[in-house]
Image (cartoon, rainbow, N blue to C red):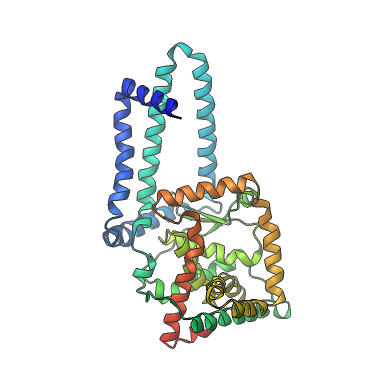
Amino acid sequence: MRKLFYTWFHFFVSNGRPLVLPFVFLISGIGFQNLVSLAPWSVERGYSRIIYPFVLNVLSHLSRSFSFSVGEILTNFLLLSAFACVVFFSVGLVRRRDKSRSWILRWLRFGVWVTAGVLWLFLFTFGLNYQRPLLFELLRYEQRKAEPLELEALGRMLVENINQSYAEAHNGGRKIPESGEIIELLNEAYDAAPEFRLFPKGEFARPKPVYSSEVLTRLGISGIYIPFTAEPNYNADIPDFQLPFSIAHEMAHQRGVARESEANFVAYVVCVNSRDPFVRYSGFRNGLGVLTELYRVEPQKAKELAQQLGTGYREDSRRAALFWAKASGAAGALSHRVNDLYLRANRVKAGAADYSNSTTLIIAYHLRQRSAGSPEAIR
């Protein structure tokens, strides 16, 4: 590795004059991202509240008229272009053995320009939202640990609501809502949630299924937000009871919630406050991290509550485990690693582990609801 590093360093020093400008452009993007992270409230007031809503509405206006995912088409085109560039570079390198240095330099310059351009475009269309204040601060939630009795009460509430919403959703042969109806229910819940008035308002691009859902399954991905087209995309093959939560999660990204734990929390609140029991069931399932917190202080009570989960929940969990076992191979591991690096590059210290950090927000949300005497706290 040292030999390789010295080789590239010597190459850059000897031939790097054409690379100076693209590298400055790239490094300035990285530096800007780190600089604005020092002033999260300035990002909130200047970017997340003013610039991002404008960008979101413009991009949504361009992509919402298409029934298919423009982002998926764009992604496939970029992947094919990247593959073609690799082939073209390799063939050219073989044919130009006597001029390999200039050929490498030309393609390296091109690659740095493209990388820098994509970075700045990403920051402008979405990426700066990673540097806004924590949602915990924006919602002014009380930062304290829940008492064991509070955790037990919350755990019991979740178990009861999971069982109740499952029974209501499947009562009398009730029809499970289709994806289009789920999206309408989620939009309705987003508009009605008082906690999320700070989010952008408007007619955004609708969540869209991707044709390559099988590929997403193998990669362990239930949904993905494409910031360059402002489109929430979801895996159409996932178990039906996971669909509302997954779509709500990507819709949270669309509204400027960048961190995964916060998008999970927003999806939870939106789902559990829906008027449809199937959507509520999808949300309440994702609040059971409360039982994990309870297990750390009262393991026996946590076990007793877990045992009260109904057969419907257990059967759905079994189906989900079988489905996501498809992502247990090398492709799933690689996808997880890439996602972890992506999140860390955006200054999310926990990386991919951040997904599970939504429990703290869920607990704080219900504690506020209970202290305010809201009926929603004990639905």
